[in-house]
Length: 153
Image 1 (cartoon, rainbow, N blue to C red):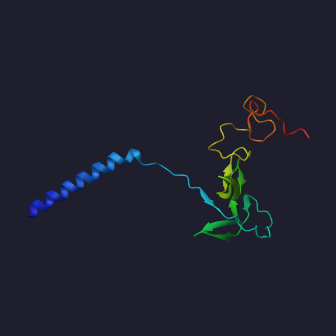
Image 2: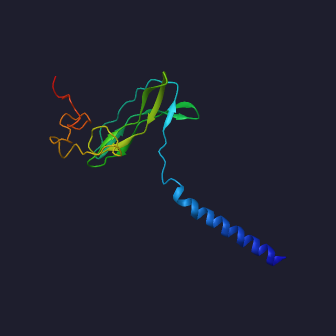
Image 3: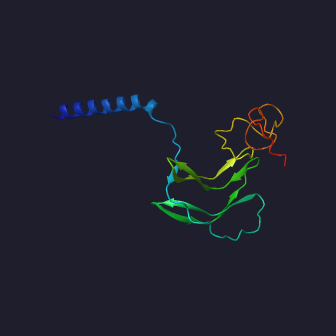
């Protein structure tokens, strides 16, 4: 009887291990989470911005979505990253099938300061602004695709 239980346990463990190893490549490495909500966030609250601190960046307060309710998170200091610009959290309105919706964009550090998230930005606007794939007017559109120079007024 003890032999039969040990054999059944060993067979179950082998089956489970094989199934886990077989499914490992199918599992995604990391997932991007996007929060979408129907009602607009409340107006921003007024915050007194403290005096500047050397080596730090002030992140302003913003509304976060917690259990389908907006909750205010006050501003805070983050240690500055040399060569990067801090882009604060914000809510962006967009239209989906004729309905206004709101999408939360978390804060991030932007390498070249053009506002395009680094995972989508294939061109570093800091190094070459004049070539075909540079961005001479700093609007995030490479020169080859940009028909309008935004520097002209």
